[in-house]
Amino acid sequence: MNSEFEQLLHDVESFIASGASRSDILLNTCKLLKDKVYHYDWVGFYLPDGQGSTLILDSYFGKSTEHTTIPVGKGVCGQVAENKKLKIVQDVSLEGNYIACSTDVQSEIVVPILKDDQFVAEIDIDSHSPSPFTIDDEKFLTSVCQKLSVLF
Ligand code: SME
Image (cartoon, rainbow, N blue to C red):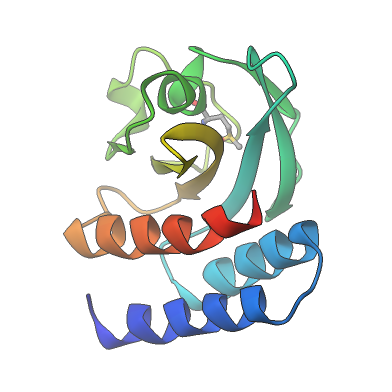
């Protein structure tokens, strides 16, 4: 992982250690990642409802979106909730099961947060850059999600 991502991971660890509420920690994480990583243009967290059939938008930073609820299985977010596996879409125009939030978005990465192998939340990042995500983004965001799992 590059040194910029290493530093951001330390910052997320500090948020968690601060004892702030879960929603404040998630919001601070959204702001940090959107502000510091050039190709992260919208960062948000979706959490499953009580039944586990719908995702509800929790903290986010970026333009407001009408997609505040997403059925599990629908869109990139819904697929990740169903499969519990990270998904990268380097070109959203080629993704059949995709929910468009803004025409500016070209690519997306969604990473699940698992606790005891159960899906408890996911981080969703939209990018205005074409094909920007690398193995470094995967490693970094997987580590962020592992750290945040203690909040659930
Ligand atoms: N594009 C997502 C919907 C959420 S917005 O990106 C905020 C999807 O296909 O699930």
